[in-house]
Every structure is written in structure tokens, then in C-alpha cells.
Amino acid sequence: MANELNPIPERCFELAVRVVKLCRHLEKHSSTARTIARQLLRSGTSIGANVEEGQSAESKPDFAHKYAVALKEARETKYWLRLLAATETVAENELAAITKEADEICRILGASITKVKRNSEPQ
Image (cartoon, rainbow, N blue to C red; front, side, top):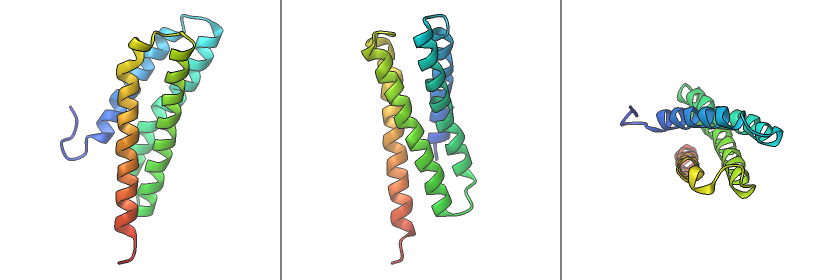
């Protein structure tokens, strides 16, 4: 269940679970699929790890940095999902929900970074 005040850590964790399950499925396929799966596994699980680190950031700039790393990983995750669909390794409709969630997480992370940076500027 997502924390009502800050659902992003839980959403990132749930996305990582979905990525792990997808990668397990891909491991049963071609060597190309397995290679992409390893890349996807790294980026898809790194998002939540960086968000968790950001939860205990020592400062607003540190928080923004951790979330920026998470955003980069989320964008990379979207890339690997897009590649899986474009190469017909996995049907695009089967990836639609996970791709949508990765995109929403990118938007949330980007907005969070912008807000923190704006609030950190001298008045």
C-alpha cells in the first residue's frame, strides 16, 4: 500500500517488482532478450533504490541529486521497454501498463526535482 503523503517510494518499489518479473520471463528467451533484460533489471530496480536514498537526504540539494539519478534510471527503463516493443521481443500491448507507470514516475520525479530546486533558491 502506497504512503498517502509520499507514494513515490512505493510506486518505484512496485515498478521494480514488475521489472523483475518481466526480466524473469525474458531470461527464457533469446540471448538478445536476456541481454536487454539485464540492462532493464539494472535500471528498473535502481529507480527505487535512489528514491529511497533520497528519503534520508542530508539536504535539499542532496535530495534533488538522488531524485535526478532516479529520473535518469527511469528514463533508461523507458528506453529498454520501448526497445523490447520495437523489436517485437514483447508485444507492445503487454508492455503498455509498465511503460505508462515508468512514464508517470518520470513525470513525478521531474516535478519533485523542480519543486525542491525552486524552493532552495534564495528569495
